Image (cartoon, rainbow, N blue to C red):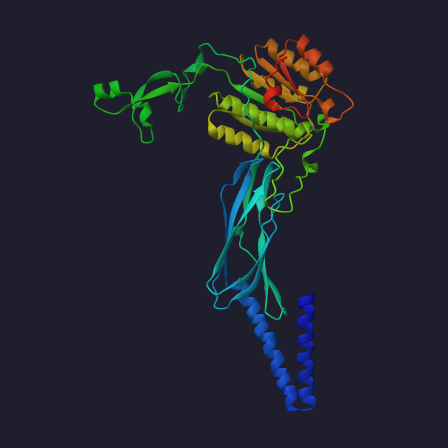
Amino acid sequence: MHKLESSGVLFLLWLASLLAALTIGHPLFFNLFYLFGAILLLSLLWAWLNINSIRISRQVRTRHVHVGQFIEERFSIQNTGLLAKLWIELKDESDLPLHKASRVVSNLGRKQQQSWHVRTPCYQRGRFMLGPASIFSSDPFGLFLLNRNLPESFTSHVVIYPLAVNLPAFQPPIGQLTGGEVTRRRTHYVTTNVSGVRDYAFGDSFNRIHWPSTARTGKMMVKEFELDPMADVWIFLDMEERVQAGLSYRDLTPPTMPDVHWEKIPAYELPPSTEEYGVVIAASVAKHFLHQNRAVGLVTYANAHHREIAQTDRGERQLTRIYEMLAVTQAHGLLPLGEMLAAESIHLSRNTTAIIITPAIDAEWVAACRHLTARGIRVTAVLIDPGSFDMPYNSIETQIELTASHVPHYVVHEGDRLEEALANKR
């Protein structure tokens, strides 16, 4: 506002001097007219050159991190013009919590460059945008404040994965397959089951070469493998909004950062939310089984009746797929867990392992677990006790029902260390 008022006053003085020069004809008013006009023109040109003879770049070290880690960026601003820049302001409008990339660069000489690093702690999972951004500058007299929006190439996305802890003592009952069609499926993974040999193809690793066959045939031969006789693991995450307790995803707020950079920032702690506990448990369980080279899938109904699924697969790529799915999952579901299990049970074969993660305490989903067990499916429940999240009810009766139904289960309370809670099977 002050900049506009200054330029407006000077413009009025320029018009007044023009009017006086035409009516009175004194040389002083002509000189003032030329002076004010030159100041306005040169100031506007200076401000325009300030924001258009600048090159700004943003480099993001990684676009995928877990909560509790950092997003690191490097900004660089270069003066490509012939005039020094008294000040340049970069205004960044990223929606990443605690992200502070806006900066004022002063005394940027001709052909000079300044760089700085931005290190943002991540306390909330999700998909966030870095940018858009714009730059502001003015002339030495402060008459014109101009801005320029930076191109879309300056804007990018980052994904904050949920926390995934190691579960060394988590040992639920696991289904095993003994022969059958499943063990005859070819796989590109290296397993203990060699099914035969074939000709070498570009991209095959050298540890798959079968040297006796290579020596016998005179050409490079590699081993083919079959899947291990282990059943798939399916994770069912209950995201029904009605049964959640504690804070919701949209109510989460990051902690207060210290005023000075040398003070230690707060460590990440799981918020008091059954939604967040469920997501972290699902991520940890997926990590646990995928690192055992098992095929893992994930199912959740997180948005009305919409089904979100990651089909069973193995390897780091599957773990990344599950992380990305859980990063944006929110508890907006309307389908009760019992109905979800009934709908998904038709896709489960005998000896499949089903890990059910829920804060629900109703008896319907326990009955669904009994039905799955009767079909030969290995069911394990991870029950997040809503009573520990300041709800007027708890999961004691549900635990008794699970015990009577011979369904192995784990109970997680608010504040528990997941490594310890998921080591105490009941």
